[in-house]
Image 1 (cartoon, one colour):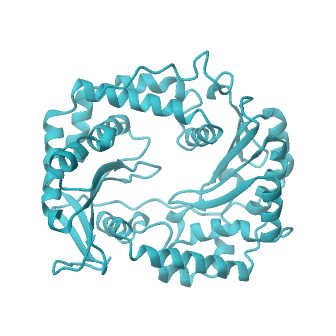
Image 2 (cartoon, helix red, strand yellow; image 1 turned 30 degrees about the horizontal axis):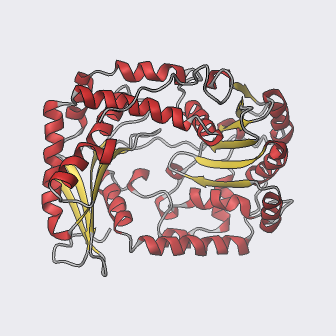
Image 3 (cartoon, helix red, strand yellow; image 1 turned 30 degrees about the vertical axis):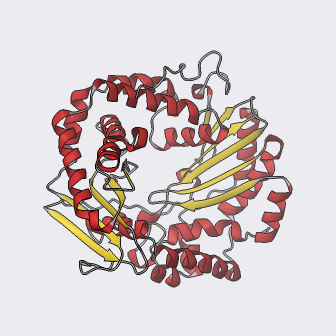
Length: 442
């Protein structure tokens, strides 16, 4: 399928911020916090998101989920506001605000009418700087998290994802576990653990992006006034990810879950970081192999032609650390082995033949087009700005992006596929109805 021609990013007739992302005001506050503000007069609202450089990689294995628990608890009470007071204040103005955490970062986000930005920033500063982690609220939050985790135990997709991680990475690597923890670790996390972890939040490791109908200079002044006194002692929190040994042969985990009639299967290999020179070739190759249309070549062959899967796709999980490349499928339990072999066959065919000219053209058009759509909203603009800051891509990245994508050659895509997509050394995890083939209990 051919995708239609698309307008230039931030073309002369396109709505949105005048001058595009390159007109963003970027400043560093006196305490080291990086601020990015973009005026978008086409919207009466404002969106913000930010990140602090602490996450699940800074946890110990027996406190897995601590970063996410801590971030989620920020809104549950501060020195000057109870949880209910914060909810009442934000709901009365139609604002939303929250926080969570991933592997490398703890994130926060919010949305409001532009006139209510000062209130949202005051509440956000209260959360980030002065949380009190009140015990009753911590127990309510813990119970909610435990309910979710118990549901995950019955979820074939979640179980296979967890098993895949444990097979891909050694036990001392934080990627070997999921960032939201386990039932056991969440039960063990104390209020003191959260207070201690929060002490690693520091403005010099924090970036915040704000987009909407605002005046950047005034926003920077407001942020300096609200956050300027946040200047805690530097902490020694560092974490270098341990080396990951190369995969050798096929490692497999089969799990059974009572009451299920469908199996979920994931297979994966080690991948790359977002800033790796191979990233764009890998990105395009993954789109063609398992994303475009009804999920690329894998969808066309494994699902449409052979009828071996209810759904099948692939993903490249590249971030600050080298995440995996993963193929995922939902299959009839009787078709698991055939589906695995069909996926391996398509990977080998892709490595041998590479993409067609039409596939490469479609993938380039898709990436450019999806970027246009993302940049149509404040939420998309603000998340893009934060990504540009986190990965050091530069505020002119959007203008350079089409050329970056168009320069990737078919030969580069083939080379990347041959380098990373092994069909001899990989891991696979399957979860489904009870059978005699269970080999692990991940």
